[in-house]
Image (cartoon, rainbow, N blue to C red):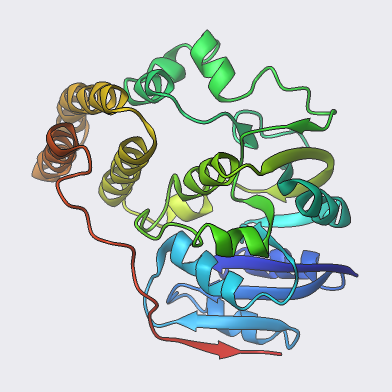
Length: 319
């Protein structure tokens, strides 16, 4: 058994959580599930596993908040984040050793055919240019463009270990002491998106390293969390977190370029949305996105965004 604490953050995960938990039992010293107030019976399923510790939140803490509650309860020196729609295949001990040596480590995320989820498993940190290509749809229209190839690490040899920048938070191991030193995950990225990128960026900025270990792998369904959200909510959250990341880590000029790209991209998305959906909700969504980008453009920080979220009430079960 590997001396590692697995932290799984769930929300409406009843359909996938059993496979995830069962892939960890007997392999990891500790398995912790933080449930973000699911209403689909996720917590009840987790409670049926006596060796799994359930932290049942009374509200949706978001991914960062869930990670922080789980990491605070971890007993091992190394913590592994695992998505509820992922199941471990191999390499848990390799991830632990690599995290102890370098600071953090990630492995291969595999689709249902056993192929690497290229472009998602490992990425480089987003730049103003790569974010603009995402926002304006260039990477979707021309996925082979040089900016996208670099950003999504399409040049990565998936069979060779390497030092990398940004493994996906769906399979990410790190030392507990580093999580403490960095002050945990930034809960302002709520409820999701870019919080794992921000954590990896701060980790590297503080002199630690992140290792890609191809011998470690997990099967990953992908898109589980995003499917729980209505498209309008998903748009607001994704753009909000993207702008938070840009405001925190890009230069003032880089942030301005990203803000202008968001504002420019909101216009055609509004037009297309109105044609497809014929709903005034489309106007409300992209007006919100446009205004938010404008605040970041003017103030550099969103015009006074809320501070990190505080610990909220949660109940803990299991042993």
